[in-house]
Length: 188
Ligand code: SF4
Image 1 (spheres, rainbow, N blue to C red):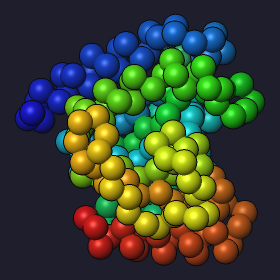
Image 2 (spheres, protein in one colour):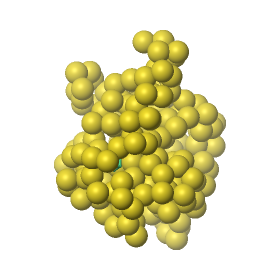
Image 3 (cartoon, rainbow, N blue to C red):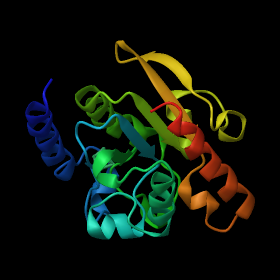
C-alpha cells in the first residue's frame, strides 16, 4: 500500500474513532486521541490510554510522559514526524484509572486496523498494559528484548519498554528506559 492510500485510510479511521460511542468512555472524554504522526512509519509506539493533557488536546503523549518519549526518540535520532504514536484505548479513562477489559475489547479493533494500515517493522509496547494486550509477560522481565510473533497474518517484531510516565520520578528506571532506546537503534 502506498503512502497516499495509507493517509486516506487513517483519515477515515480517525473520523470513526473521533465519533465512536462503543464504550462508556465517550461520555467522559473531551477528545478522542486516535494517534498521529507518520502513517508510513517503520516504528509504531503503543501506550496505555490518553491522560488529561492528551484528552484536552486530542494528541498522543503531550504531557510530561511525552517529553520523556521525545528524549528517548532523540537518543535514536528520531523525531515524532518519523514514527506513529498511539495507545490501546483511544479515550481517557476518568482520573486515569486502569482500562477495563470491556473497554479494551471495544477499542482494540481500531488498533488492529492501525497496525494493518501502517504495517510498521517494529511495534514498541510502552508499559505493562500495552505489553499484556499482546503477551503474557511482565514488563520487568521482557523490556529491551525483541519478541517475534505472527500477528494479524504477518510475522511482526515487538519491543517492550517501560512506560515513559513510570520513569519520571525513578532515576533507575530512567537509565533503563534510555538504554532500551539505545538497543532499539540496533533493530532499525
Ligand atoms: S475508548 Fe475506544 S471504544 Fe471506547 S468510546 Fe473511545 S474510541 Fe470508542
